[in-house]
Length: 326
Ligand SMILES: Cc1cc2nc3c(=O)[nH]c(=O)nc-3n(C[C@H](O)[C@H](O)[C@H](O)COP(=O)(O)OP(=O)(O)OC[C@H]3O[C@@H](n4cnc5c(N)ncnc54)[C@H](O)[C@@H]3O)c2cc1C
Image 1 (cartoon, protein in one colour):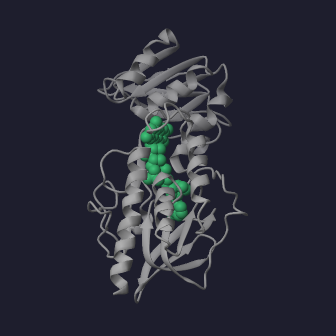
Image 2 (cartoon, rainbow, N blue to C red):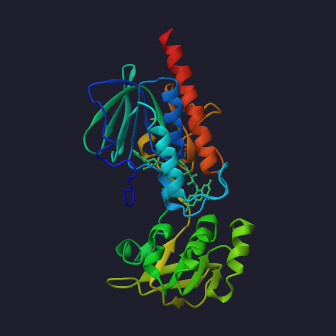
């Protein structure tokens, strides 16, 4: 799951009662899970939020310019504001715990964590988000953390004055280029497709940087080279042709995200992309299990959408629990 980042520290955020049947367990501490937690707490549900970290993908985002109420806010700052709001309410929070299984015993849902803890609940919200997709080329796995990165916000400062390559010309790739512009000496951008797929505003800003950014569109990556650290990357034109070696010290892989839905596989209906299928009330294929945010098949993956879906999921879980009480 990459490097763990904590705002609520694992020590202070460790209230998880194993000998207790929660009304609701929310898995995931990104915008969807944190918003669900606030809505659940305001309905006075006996709830637990369990997550690997607090903030999720917002921790990987330098600038957020499209969350209403803020012209500009960094991802980390927004996560801290979300966290502060959740902390106003008396719900249990366990940070630093990865939920590894979800099943049902009688009427109860049972979740287990990577540290061997077992939690029971009458309803569950999965808000586990997405993670970076690997490129799957020779050299990638061996050189992760030694020049290969999936997080420009986290690692860009390590490449001051260096030559770097960003793989992927979508919004994530363009955002990575923006993060690297003030730091790296030269930035190559590689994509198998013939042009940018990023927001025009981002593309315009990158174009304004002039020759510092060179594009290799219509190219694929053959391998990443280096023994102890990255020393280069080798490309090839998509239709065939001579290999193109580029001397780089950093490789930023930004080719999209895959849903963190392993937990739900075999238990809930997933679509072809591995996303959890939900209806407009965030209900999954199993009554009592709800899902929200990037892990679901709801189109468009944005903070404001994840937060909104988190609110809906908590209100739907509340309605479900009320119905069960009758
Ligand atoms: C580089 C980048 C830039 C972006 N820029 C913007 C932007 O400018 N504006 C915008 O609106 N959106 C942006 N986004 C998208 C936005 O960050 C996401 O849409 C949003 O964070 C999704 O929220 P989420 O809560 O659904 O999932 P995530 O943010 O992915 O959170 C998932 C949470 O679940 C936890 N988790 C996962 N699996 C488990 C498990 N098994 N057990 C326990 N916990 C688990 C994770 O630790 C994490 O806390 C960007 C994303 C990236 C990667």
